Image (cartoon, rainbow, N blue to C red; front, side):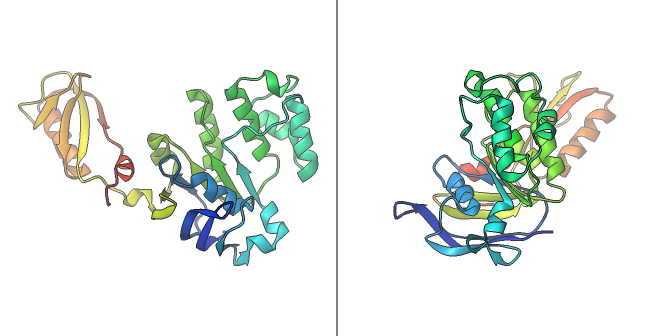
Length: 284
């Protein structure tokens, strides 16, 4: 198990700080979802940890050793930018081979992993944005690392491929540290175990996602009959009977009451994401 720690890190560009006094310690092999509004500093955080941007103050350590002082440690961290940084005039196979030669990676492995057989002979410049993203992700997995920094890895991908990528990353996170940024809050709550919230360049929250709770829960229920006389719910335009409760257990009690009346419940789901409140400035 590895430990990535930031101690009072401030960093930015051309003498202007974007991140301010960031401190946290990631010690659990899992996915740490990095959230924040546009311009909050998420990409700068990744670039600073990866060693692309030097901290103005503070330090970053991996297993107690400062990353900036160790070339070997920096090589043990892989960073996927949200930009598709690929040589446009190379074929997919040659582009991956170019990066593989620099780090002694395995091209055939990632071609199979990301299902790139039909693309490997095509020029990168001829690919769609989604296809370029897939090749960029393949580049990250050429060689196994201990820390992965993935900046919006599923952006511009279709739902099927997004799920495939998430499954790969979930498997990877069993024994690796993965920092993963996303604008999809439902994806974040589904894939992530821990949360790093950046707001205005500062660390606004560092916690387990399971500890983040909404003040109220809106539960949508679809049923074979009207349930408004059984529980305090209102039907919305999408066909859900909407029930507002203060804790999840109350939704379970309501469901039991409905079923005991012989009504078939065909669907029950939480309508709001508790992470949304973090963007609205709520304190949890």
